[in-house]
Image 1 (cartoon, rainbow, N blue to C red):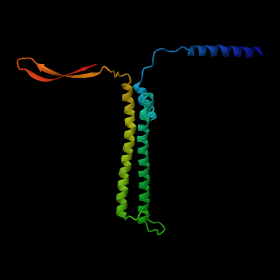
Image 2 (image 1 turned 90 degrees about the vertical axis):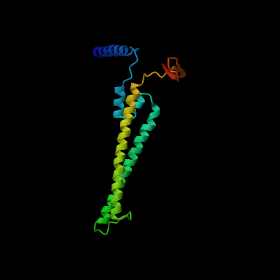
Image 3 (image 1 turned 90 degrees about the horizontal axis):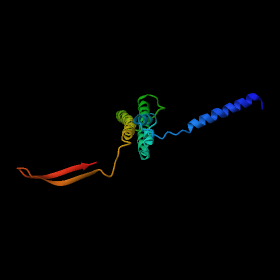
Image 4 (image 1 turned 60 degrees about the vertical axis):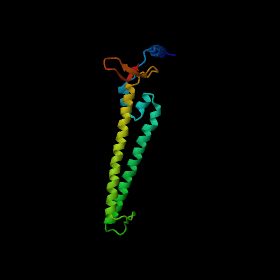
Length: 176
């Protein structure tokens, strides 16, 4: 082996061992749970904030809501296009085009307007589900360290006021 190869191998071993030695130092401090990271993850990839928060059971809700919104959005866009094409076929003077629906021009226009409205509501639903899953990830991350202990109790006791004008009531005490 030539001397340049030996130096190269020696340097690679030296730097490789020093890099692996420094990578083995483990930080014993747990990393804090970041609401900002959960929000950003959920913004760029829906459901990623829920995964970061370890709320895996929410994923089917997020993807189900988004999938359902996308399904109805796609369906209403196709319906608007279909009924518009039939309205054009009904109104043009070309004998080769036929209205497949059997509805009149006024009814077709009413159906088109209704499907456009449904399409717009599908957009609203999609953005609402998207926004709510971002909000959910952010709130869950803020409450990640919230202690829900068994010692949270609400005591409801009878109360009698022994002052000059005696009265009875209910006394509530929350212990945490």
